[in-house]
Image 1 (tube, one colour):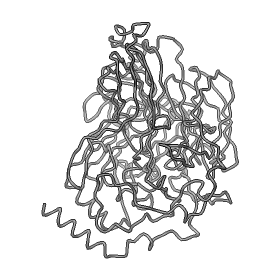
Image 2: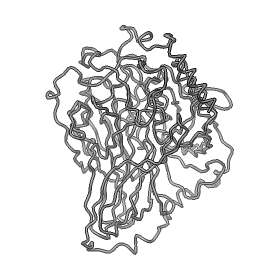
Image 3: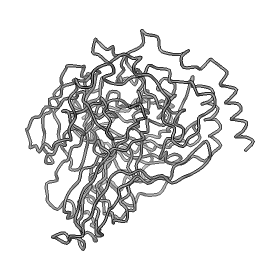
Image 4: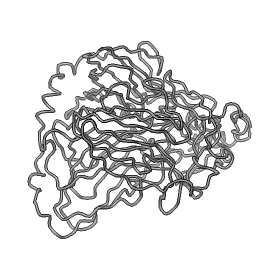
Length: 582
């Protein structure tokens, strides 16, 4: 109690120091501009070139929603050291088309489609906002195609900043991976790019920008790809399939919370939203009959939030994840899904009534030192008393073993115990943060650190921390190289073990969903314990304090990225690049 009181007094004293006041460190006008992720790991200034972004002063900073968290003394008047940005400010919203729910595009090998990133009007909880959409839809069109197909996507950028399309999880030709200044130039406003998208693996994937994802993706630029397997019994029997995209968005009584114009805000923990979205809306609901088995294809597109999805008292089994089925199906109480991950789960609704789909977490309040249960409603399933025509309950009760997956993975088991080829440490460096934030973070180091950050535990501190002050790090334990200073060169056929340790002693440790482009990997061990049920992945969580082994299969030549998929961490430096020779 004495220590906490001392820190509070120090914070209050620090409030009288003007040296960190945001208005003292605002960007000079000549540095204002829109930024994109550079291939060399830096942020490159992209001027507006006359494309109207609206008057900066109209998108004024305001304090973020605090929820149950107290205000930190000394930060009452602080704002992030950047200009605020929202799309369409100063323009009549009626100029933008009203977004509509997404359509399904059933495609075959060789088909060609048009995809356009555009400004749209969106209604969320009865209030209108200017946001983004692919083809004027939320989410973007669901692209369905058979495994082995290649389609052409003619992409046009009609938003006011550069962008690209990254085809997340696909092992496609490197030229079409959508990383600016690595695989292609950024697509500037009014320009187009032709993507050839190859579907090598069956499963559920998604597409999104790889330029300022913290803004573009958060405001609606995302969509799914469903790749049909070659055989009808690839999955077990189900009555229907539901594609579900999980997201959140940060809104207060005045509307959307502004973003940083030249660098992300919320760089410490990522931008947690306070309004939950499923398929871009707040009212997800389905009606089923008693005994119906529903297959849910889940994708998490949130900037930072890891969801813990529950389905009331319905019986749930997990079937597949990013790039394959699991070796065997298993019963689960909930589905933990980090940003960019996908899971396929089968759910049996065998009792009439309403089943709530929820995000059920144990939240933490660092300032009060308290844990508290927290539940977010994601959707509703209404189960009628009418019995479904075909009874699948007996077959649903069987946990299938997937011999094809076991055989595929079996070819690599002899390498599970090999020494790591690369050892990385996840860490954090800060500079020029307001003194009250630094003091509070120093104090936190002596407190309990959860392995997962389920909620924004310090909204004000998080909001005030930008990509200019926070550097998230992937450091090579042996060479000391950080982020884009790492130089990795592989060749097709290599099998690389990457061991990542998430240092709990850093000034604010946090879980990281690590994504590797263009390849697939297995998580073979976590904290020295062998993974008992394997699945091919492209994104996996590294909890705080944990050591996770990635066994990376190198099959795809070119220049590829590896990064944290918390959007703000990516733009705060947590990325590296590797080259693969044929």
